[in-house]
Image 1 (tube, rainbow, N blue to C red):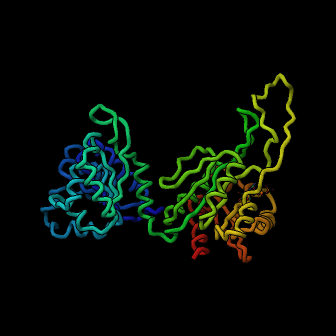
Image 2: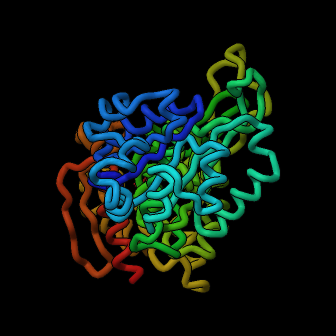
Image 3: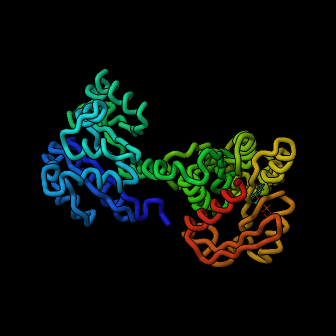
Length: 403
Ligand code: CTP
C-alpha cells in the first residue's frame, strides 16, 4: 500500500504564479490515495479558484472566508489535528515571513500554528526576493523550528529572468512528502544499501555485454526502505528509471565498480540488498578502439567477475556489517534448489527466488512472484505481487531481522 494512502494532507496554496502547478500536485496526491484538504490564501485566489482544487480532490477547498464562517472556532484546529503533514506549495516570501513570526491573520497561517504535523514548504518567488536577507532569515528561523524546505530551483522565473526561485516539480514534491511521512518508520536510523540494474561490461568503447534487468525491483526496494525511514544508498547501473527522491545515488557500470561501491557503502550499513543482475563474465581485455568488421569476426575471451555477495560475506566475518544481507536468485529451472544453494554459498540472511521462465515475473515486467528462503530454513512463498509490494514484504523482513 502506498505511503500516501489515506494520509490526511493539508495543501496550503499561496499567491504565486506557481499556484497553478499546485492543482496538479493536489490531483496526483489524490490519485495516490491521499485525502487532500486545500487552503488557499487571499493572494492565491487571484491566481486559482477553490473550484479548481475541489474538482481534483473531490473535497471542499477552504479560503480565508471560512475563517469567519460558522465552523470558524474549530475549523483550523480540526484540520490541523487531523493532518499527517502540512505542505505549503507554492510558499511565497509573504507567507514564509508570516509563519516565521507566528502571525495568524488567515486560515492557512492559523492552521499552521494549530497543527503539530510536520511542515514542508516549497518556496516559489523571484530570485531577488528569495536571496533577500529577510527571507533567508525567516527560512532559517523556520528550519530551526523543524520545518523542511525543498527547492526552489534555478530556471525561468515569471519576471522573464532566470534565477533561483522556481518551485520544484510535482514529482519531486511528492517524493519529499513520502520521505517526511516515512521518517519515523520502523527503519528510522538504519542504513540500507540497495543495488539495482544490470552491469555493463565493455567490449570496446561502444559495445557492452549486459543483461535484461530493468532495475525496477531495486528501485522499488530503495523507495520502500526510504518510506520505512531508512537512509538509503542506491548503487545503480544506468537505467531508464527516475531515482527515488531522498536516496543517495552511487552510479556504476561494471561488476568491478559495483563491487567497490558495495564494499565501501556496506561497511557502516545495517543491511545490503543485492537486487542487481551482476555479470558473471566480462571480456578479458577491452579493445582500446572500436572493433571494426574488416578485421573479421572477433574471438572474445571472457573472464570471471568477482562474486560481490561472497566478497561481502568474507568482509562481514571481520566487521559483522551489514547485519542483514539479502540476495536474489533469478532462475529458469530448479528454482528452490538453486536458490537454497546460493543462500548458503553466499552467506545470506535470506534470498528472494524468482522464476524468470514465467512471463509475469522477473525482468522488465511490473510484477514479481518470489519465494523467500531464510537461513534458519523457513520459507515464505509470496503470491503474484507488484514489485512495490514485493519490496515492502522484503523490507518488512529486513526490519524484523534488524530488531
Ligand atoms: N551476485 C553477486 N555477484 C556476482 C553475481 C551475482 O553478488 N558476480 C548476486 C546477485 O546480485 C544476486 C545473487 O548474487 O543477489 C544471485 O545472482 P544470480 O545471478 O542468480 O546467481 P549467480 O551467483 O550469478 O549464479 P548463476 O548465474 O550461475 O545462477
